[in-house]
Each structure stands twice: as structure tokens, then as C-alpha cells.
Image (cartoon, rainbow, N blue to C red; front, side, top):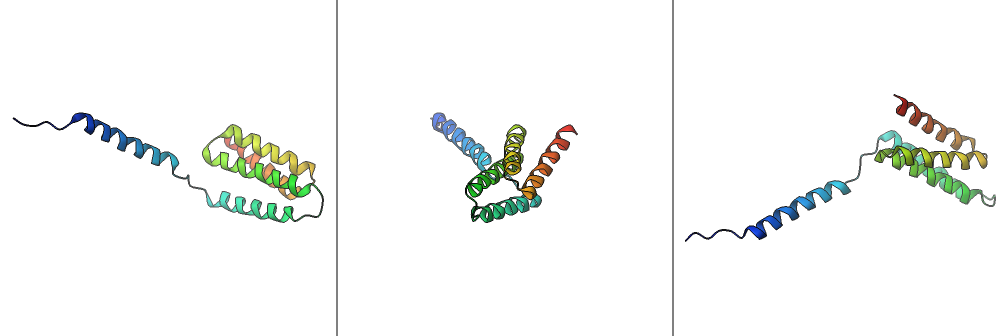
Length: 120
């Protein structure tokens, strides 16, 4: 008599391997465009410089602004338009309050880019 394979174990191994293939696809990092990578590095360098500031509170508040701007750029890469807009607006408000025109203008440009992309 011919022996049949244990179909229960076979189905279990097929489901498990499909699950791991799916999970590995989910966790692979998304590609970052060279422009956003440069912007991210520039903002990070600015955060490090701002943290050295002698003005009380500006370093921490400025750091928070850089954090929000990074978060917004990450949300853009992940396709989360709502979070992107929210975090970039928060960064813009902080930079405007601290009178940091270069950072404010940079973030305003990112917001304008977001607006023009969403209206197209």
C-alpha cells in the first residue's frame, strides 16, 4: 500500500514560509531619494550645531523642530501625507518662533512641495 505524505505538516510548512516571505517584505527599508537624504543630513547637522547654542532653551526647542522636520520627511517616504503635513507644520511653527529663518524657509519649501504634489 502506498503511503501518503502527512498533509497536515505540509500545509503548515507552506503557510509558515509564505508568512515569513510576507513579513520580510514588510520590514525592508524603503528607498530614500538622494535629495531627501541630503536634506536629512543638512537638517541633522543643523540640529547638532543648534544644540551647542549658548541661548537657553533654543537648543532644545530647535532640536524639537529638527525632530519634527525629520519625522515629516520620514512620513513622506512612507506615503503618510497627513503626518507629513502635520509634523512639517509643527517644525515650521517652532522655527518661526525661534527666529530661525533658514530652517523656516527650508521647511516652508518642503510644505509648498507637498501642497503642489497633492494638488496635481
